[in-house]
Each structure stands twice: as C-alpha cells, then as structure tokens.
Image (cartoon, rainbow, N blue to C red; front, side):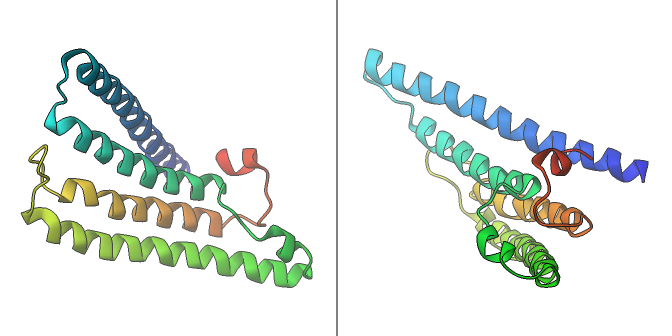
Length: 165
C-alpha cells in the first residue's frame, strides 16, 4: 500500500509541477510578447502559438486536477434529496462515468495524437501531436483519479479528505 501511496504522490507532483511550470512559462512568454510588440513593434511568430500551446495544456491538466479534488460542478441538491441507497448508486455511477470518460480520452486522444504527428504547427514548427498530447495525458490522470475516488466512500467528502492520502 505504501508503494501505491508513493506512486500517487509522484503522479500528483508531476501533474502540479507541469501545470505550474506551464503557467509560469505562459505568463513570462505573454509579458515578453506584449513588451516586444509595444517597444519594438515586433512580435515573434512563435510566441502566440506557444502561449496557446501552454494554455491548452494548463486547461487539460486543470481538468485532471478538478477530478482529483472533486471541484467540478455536481447536482448535489438533487442527489441529497434522494434516499441514501440511491445516493450511493448515483455516486458509484458518476465515478464509473468519470473512469469511462478518462479511458475514452486516453484511447481516442492517443489515436488523434498519433494521427496529428505528421503535421506541424506553423509558428513553432513543432509537431501538432505536442498540442494534442494533452488529451491522452489528461485521460490517464482522469482515469487514475476516478479509480482512486471509486474506492473512497461518499460523494460529499471534505476537500481535505480527498486531497490527502
């Protein structure tokens, strides 16, 4: 069990580390882009495309973090009005749907990423698969966190209960 906890902590660290690094890089890049446009009337052709690339990755990694932390919108008012057994069924069903969504993202995201590997982005020259790689990576994290949540009881745990362990 300690090995699984260590793996989870490493995966959490990788997710947050990349997300924070991409946010920092995007902010710096946009600042440089604005200053170069205002001061030198010149904008590097790659800067806008690279900031969009970072934005896409940040957005998708945010989806994964949202599933991890259970920060997404839920119909708690409707579910809370139901009997406890139906609440448990809804909780289980929603977690299975999340896992299924993650698996679909991994499968089709991977195929799409491979498909787009032959084309390149015009500003940076990077393969388009770098952009679309965010889909299967997010699918992996959504699946991983969905499986983790499947083994936790109850839909309405505290944020601290979910983010610990």
